[in-house]
Image (tube, rainbow, N blue to C red; front, side, top):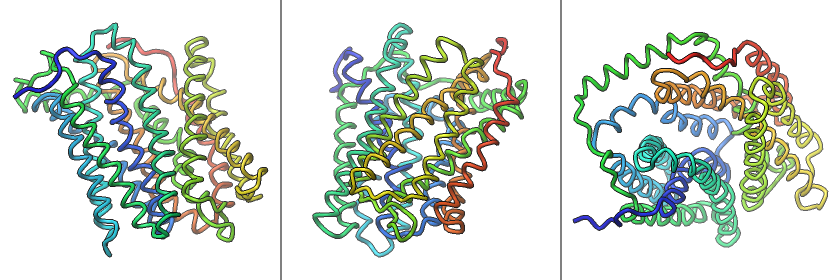
Length: 427
């Protein structure tokens, strides 16, 4: 029996759909790092385990044909939301167990693969359910609510966990309750989308044979590898974000570790404010201003300011590790929040060049698939450095580690200098 609402207004499902897309990614990539730190894992183990969780987004293009040929995009969306909700509940249920590390990682893996599949289905559904005019109109709306999910995940959820840590004095219990709450939220999103997502006629199970789909996929991948400057492009996609890839896993650990261990000694609730609110606002503003700048001057004009923006602000972590300001003082509060805002603003501004280059490089025949391959290399560029980040930090200490990150910034300048940013001709 079909209980779904007929012809729902896009405003009734686009904001919630992209909110649902953002939450599991933030939970897997950021919240898991902070949770494991509060539960006492070493930085080496945390970064190694959680960096492997990037893998579903690295290989996402490989199973996108399955999502395209089997069932409908709507079916994949609601089923993945059920699985994500169940994985959230699995993390919550596993935390009190003695072998919680193995079980929670298994559920995070399930969540990551389901989230990556949900991304494929949601983005495809967006194009099927809306005409071109509405697609253009709602592109900013979907990005905004994805950012809202980031704030809720990095800010709200971590802050809630921090409050519960204070109440229960048992981190496992606090984080378990937090994940139960997120599971309930996701089951609510599943039920809502089961009712509210439209059923466009074009969103049907495909009749194309599996062999034809995968043959077409192979031909598309080969055409991607034959694009002009492909080696340079892959190097750029893997290396441009190297300093940020080394920072992203270590920064929350640095903020949490006590002063005696070289960190800043923030509480879980403090992390929710610093990274989940101040940092996300800086990232969002940097991205918006970067988009406006490129729209008015073009990527060639803004490339080098963006390269500077994504690298130079990383020096704030050298200053924080050297001076170790106390967050409980007014000076320390403003210094830490300002530093995180500056670094995230620079990253948001500089990341615009990276995204636009991938869009330009993907132009031509099969541009959608080629862009998906680019995003896979983008995720790989974050995954590989993250796997060794914790080990490096523990060998060097926080101050020397951040100095190493700054020392690697010239690599970003180098790869930016060897790319061609002229729009390629249509193939």
